Image 1 (tube, one colour):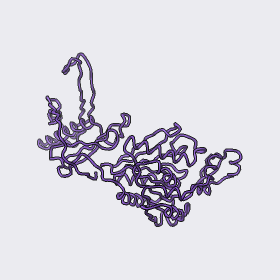
Image 2 (cartoon, helix red, strand yellow):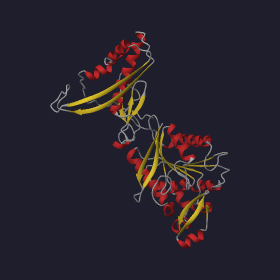
Image 3 (cartoon, rainbow, N blue to C red):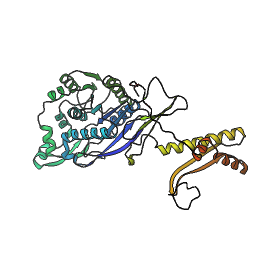
Image 4 (cartoon, rainbow, N blue to C red):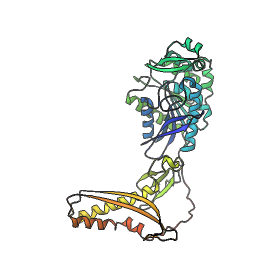
Amino acid sequence: MSSRAISFEGRHGHPLAARLELPDGPVRAVALFAHCFTCTMRSHAARRVTAALAARGIATLRFDFTGLGGSGGDFATAGFAADVADIVTAANYLRTHIGAPTILIGHSLGGAAVLAAATQIDDARAVVTIGAPFDVGHVVHRIEGDLAAIRQAGRGQVRIGGRPFALSADFLRALDEPRNAAAHIMALGKALLVLHAPLDGTVSIDNARQIYDAARHPKSFVTLENADHLLTAPEDAQYVAGLIAAWVERYLPPMVRAVNSKTPPAHGEVRVVNGNGKFETRIITATHQFTADEPVSFGGLDAGPGPYELLLSALGACTSMTLRMVAAREQIPLDDVVVRLRHDRDHGADCDHCQDSEGRVEAIEVTIELLGALTDAQRARLLAVAGKCPVHRTLAGQVHVHVADHAPEATEPVAA
C-alpha cells in the first residue's frame, strides 16, 4: 500500500489537509472517511480503518475538517454545516483526481455528517456510520464550559474531550437548531450500514437503533462487541474495515478494464491499460501486475514509478543480473552490486553523439558499485560486461517501434 499527503481547497478558500491511502494493486472502489467530533484524520479509527480498506483494494481518503489538524479555517465558527460542505468538497476532489467515491464512511459526528452530505454526492452508493449520533445536538453534552456566557458574549473557551477549544455563539446556535433527522435519513436513497458498540460510553447504542429505524432498505446493522467509541484497539478497526469491504461488495458494479479475461498476455508480452486517476496506468504481464503513475507535481497521484523510472529500472535490473551471472560463471567473488541511474536530456552544439540538427542527446548516467574482495582485473572485467547487457544493447542500438491500430476483442467485466 502507499499513503499520499495531499491538500485541496475548501469551500471558503482555506486549505484542507488530507491523506489518500492507495492499494498496491488495482483500485476496487473509492471511499471517503469523515473523522469524529474534534478528532483529526490521525485518529486511531481514521488511520487504521482507511489503511485496512486500502489493503482490501479500496482507495480511501481521510481529511481534517475545517479548523482541525492541518486544515485551515476557524473551527470556532465552522459548525456542522461546514463539516457537511467539507465532505462534499472532498468528494469532488476525488471525482476529479482518482474517481468518484462510491462509499461514504463517518465516525461519530462524522457519521451524522456523511448522512447529511450523501444526498449531495450522486456517485455514492453506500453509506457507513460508526458510533454515530442520531441527533447532531448530541455533541453539546460533550462540551465543558459556560455555554450561556458564550451565547451572550459571542465567543468563548470550552473543553472538549479534555482539550481546549474556542467556540462561537453561531457554532452553538447551529447545534440548537431543530432538525427532522428521521426524515433526512429516510430520504437517503443509498444502502446504509450502521456499526455501533453496545458498550459505547460516548454515544449510546440507542442512537444506532434510531438511525436504523429511520432508514429505508437496503440497510444493515452490526454490533461491535467490546469495542470502545474511538476504536482504539487495532483489532476493532481491522474488524470494521473487513465488515465494510465485505458488505459494500453487493452494492458496487464490477470494475471494467480493457483486458480480455479469456486472453491474458502471453509470455514476453506486456499489456498496458488505464488505471484510476489522471495518469495511473496498470501494467500487466503473463504473471505480474504493477502500477505506473506521474508524481503529484505533474498532476498524478504518485501511485507508482513514472515511465522514465521504469526505463531506468529495466536497464539497471538487466545490468545487475548480467554482472551477477558473469561473476558466478567466472567465479569472481562479487558479494553485491549497486546500480544507480539517472536520465538527462542534454542539448548542445558540440557533442560526440548528436544525431539531429538540434544537437539533442538522451543521456543515461550509470554508476556501478561493486562490492567484494575483487582484484583490479576482476573489477575491469565486470565493468566491461556491464555495458553489454541485453537492455543496454537494445537502448544503444537502432530501435524501430512499430505502432499499429488494433480492433479490440470483445471484453468482459473483470473485478480488478
